[in-house]
Image (cartoon, rainbow, N blue to C red; front, side):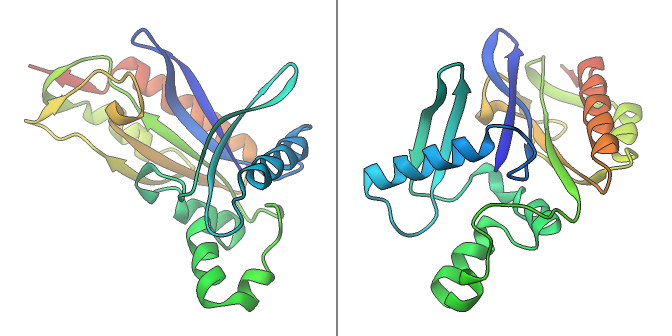
Length: 203
């Protein structure tokens, strides 16, 4: 269960700032949303394999945004985080489903009992042009966050960079992982402060 953090950025209404892996009991209405998702899959006749489903919780209850017979996207950078937190991911679960039914049967129905807490934080660009430099001081501060685990930077010096207005124009992401949820949330906020201060200089 991944919870998206989407905000207004560069005039676009739903830009990804990040996402957090949640245990089923971490928020009051998650179980209701999971039940709703299962009913959607039943209604569509989806029985086997991975399914990427996006649900929005509004005042009247869960609302379907998207359902696709595919695995979660995002270059798969989320998979190692899920495996660190849970001991499995959608990728390993899918493989077990087809190759090791006994292992698949042992998986919990919903995620719980986290070993660590994890979040993905998105790199965003307020500028467009040819990338001249990435601010070394601020990037170093990001890599020194207590929960910093890895980074996937999708832009490089000398190449074009676009203003971030959607998932496809994001500049990359940073994976955060820590035993303490408080530390993780603090680092996530600090990361976004550093991004807002400016990481990219363009020609």
